Length: 473
Image (cartoon, rainbow, N blue to C red; front, side, top):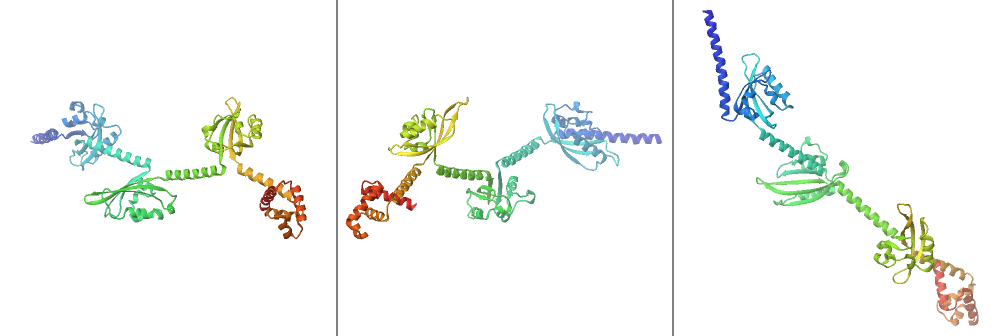
């Protein structure tokens, strides 16, 4: 009786297991109807005990090729340890349902992402040797997720490279959404969340705040676009410059302000440096007023800029090809021939050249030697400064000094007579004013004409006026 009882118990147990096996097999087939994969694995080895057609197709292999082989071998290599660890954890603790997503390698070397839902087949407190799992294909969602991640990465990268941040502010809300780059532009910590308008305005230079207020001042018109520039508050670090664009749109009945902010500090600094450089250059040109020309060893003008030509009243094209000696007066032509054209060292010379209208101009020519690749002296680089005015002053000063020296030869009475002559008075009037006779005036007049080497009253007047220039200076 005992033996029969045991056999009866064993038969019942076998029947329960067979029913379980039959139930699992039926479950796999039933899930095929809904294109849901199913697999039964050994927890210690991930060896496949049973698999339905849907999961086999997802992996791209025949079910017979998968049976009695570790499913882990078809998991992407980087994710394989995680897959094995998850199955092993279910062997020790199977009281929960576990979901995991893993990339599987199919037979055409492509990857399919499957989301598994694992449930251990545990009896009592014993370890679970088997785990059942359903699987669905989430490749499209994963690809979309990856594309979104890449798009966000590209978006962040593009904003970082172009130094641009973006934001969105819904009417009625206290804070706005800021992109990652916008936080960086304003040296803010993203973990603290977007700044309120009051916090942001503190970051703006006080002189530019009215621009910000104006942009956010009603009325707001859908489709309106507003552009402006502002700078950062120097109280919080080095000054930075920004160009902002704000456009207004309506979403779900609410006005939404969207905008971009670009860091233009470098362009602004470059523009400022360029402007300063141009101002310095213009100042240098005004101060130096240099013209430039290139001569060959015969004195022929090979190149000339507009400034050099204008000193002679010419256009640059009109003097190129002409000989500088032919434009000079005789003494200067000889100096150019003897001292400039045949000396391979830097020198400066004052020469007189003929202006287009016929008068002579003085130029200070600073000469630099030109050499070819064989170190042969082949020409002259000339920098010219118009010194005509200076030379006129020098000449006039010299004449004034000579005239004053001549006047010193006169006696006091002769100087008194000269002053009256210069004022245009007749001898009789001069005699009455100086209380001397006309004959005495005539004698003084004759003497001073001889001492001053003057032939006429006009020359006396010119000499006197020239001397006055020296006295005034």
